[in-house]
Image 1 (cartoon, one colour):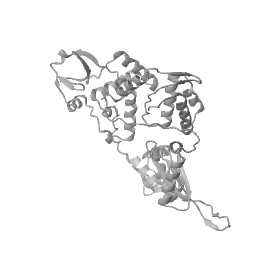
Image 2 (cartoon, rainbow, N blue to C red):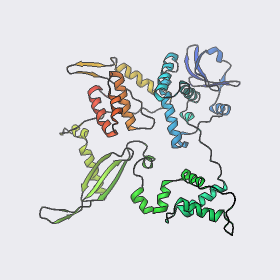
Image 3 (cartoon, rainbow, N blue to C red):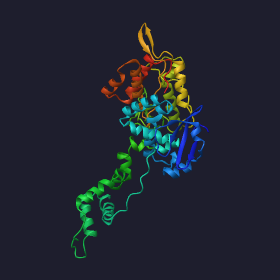
Image 4 (cartoon, rainbow, N blue to C red):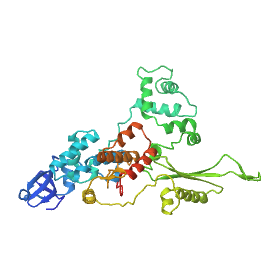
Length: 420
C-alpha cells in the first residue's frame, strides 16, 4: 500500500492520502467526504483499482487540460487556487479546517464549496476534474429563427446599411406573405426579431459587412482587450510595429534629409510600451536599433555595467520548480522559507524600519499583473501591519503606478529577496 493508491472493495472505492505506521488517511472517492484516519488492518480486503473504474462508477471522466477551452481552464485554475493552501495540510484536521475557513472568506464562497472542490481533487488527483463540464450544442433553430437569420444576412449585414425595421419588413414580405401580398396569420413580432439580432450579434461581422474590411482594419480592429489577450494570456508577448513619421527633417544647412522611421514595442497583454527608437533605416535594422535602445534604457542593465542610472532598480534572481501536482513542491518551499526566516520581522532602529526576510505570494489564476501586485501589498500589510493594500484600492491606481509602488515597498521592507 502506497501513497495515492486507489483501492476497491465491492462498491466502495478509496484513495490513500497518507500512511503513518498502522494508520492510513483515506478519502471515499464515491461519496467524496473529507479524509479520515483508519487502521491499516481494515484495508486488507481492498484490492488495487484503476482511474478508469472510478470514472465508470462516478460518471466523472477528467478531460485532458489541452482539450479544455479558455473558460473551462479559467474556472479550473480558479478552483485549484482555492484549495492549494489546504493541500499541504490534508493530514492535519485543525489546520485544514482553518485554511478552508480562510479561503472561503477570501474568495466569497461557502466552506462547503471549498470542501467539495478539495474532495473532488483528492479523489482524482487531477486538476482537470475541477473543470466544469462543457455545455452540449444548443438546440436546433426553429423555422422562424432561420427566417430571421436569413433576413439579417440578406438585408441588414450589407453595405446598404439598412435598419433593423427595414430588414424585418423585408422578411415579412418575402417569408410571411402569399403571392397576393397578404400577411399570414402567425408571424414573429419585431421585438422577437430584435431579440434574435442582439443575441447573435457579432461586432466584427457588423463592421466588416456594413463598412468593409479595409475600414474595419483601419478604424475598428481591436488593439487591446480580449481580441489581443486571446493569443497573449500573460505579460511577456511583445508586438512590434514601425511607421514613417509625418514630418520632414532638415540638416544644419537647411537641406532636406527625409522622414524618420518610428519603431515601437508594446506588451500585448498590458499595453505597456516597452521601448521605441527613431532611425533612418527600416526593416531588420530598425528592429535591431529598437532592441538596443530597450536594453540601454534598462536601469538594471545600467547598474550592472556600472553606469549612471536613475529611477527604481528592481528585479531579482529566480528559478522554476516543475513537477506533478501533489508531490510537495509548495510544502518544500514553505519549509525552506521557515528555516531561512526564523525571525519573521527584522526591526532596525537607525533608521527605524521593519524588514521582512521573505514573503510567499500565490500567483493569480488569470496571471493578472495588477492582482499579483495587490497581493504583494496585502501580504506586506499582513506581516508589518501597514496600509499599502487599502490605500492602493482607495486610490484606484493603475498597473504602471503599482509597479513603481511595489518596487519601492520591496526596497524598503522586503529583503534580501522577494519570492513569488
